[in-house]
Figure: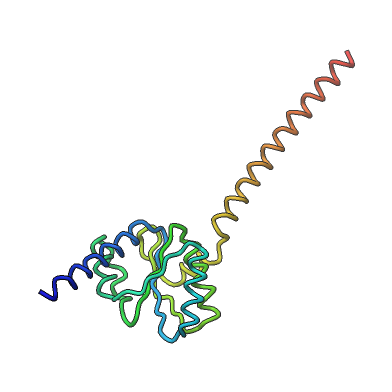
Length: 169
C-alpha cells in the first residue's frame, strides 16, 4: 500500500514535466553538479526574471515525460544530475543559461529541444547570441515604420511636383 501514493506522485511529476516540455518552445537540460546553493539561487532568480522555468528532477522521470511525447533524442543525455529549463521563448532560455554557464563553469549545458526538435550545445549557444524577442520585434517595427515614412515622403514629393506643374500652367 505504501508504494501507491509514491507511484501517484511520480505519475503526477511525469505529467507535469510532459506538459512543460510540450508547451515550451525552448527546453534545455543542464547538469548543475558543483554549483553552490547561492549560485543555484542566483541561477533560479535569473531564469525567473526571464520567465524561464527550472526544475530539478530524476532522469527517469524526465526521460519518461519526453518519451511519452515521442522524443527520444535526449535519452543519451540523462546521466548525472539533471535539471530542465523551459520557456515559450527559446532565446530567453538559451541566453540566460549560456551567460550563467560562462560565469559559473560548474553549470554544464547538456542538450535541448527547439520547438520539440533535438538541438545540441552549439545550437543553444548560437541561440544565446541572438537578440531577445523584444529587441527583434522592436527592430521589425522600426523597419516597418521606416518603410512607411519613406513611402509617405515619396508620395508627398509627387504631390509637391504636381502642385508645382499646376502652378506653372
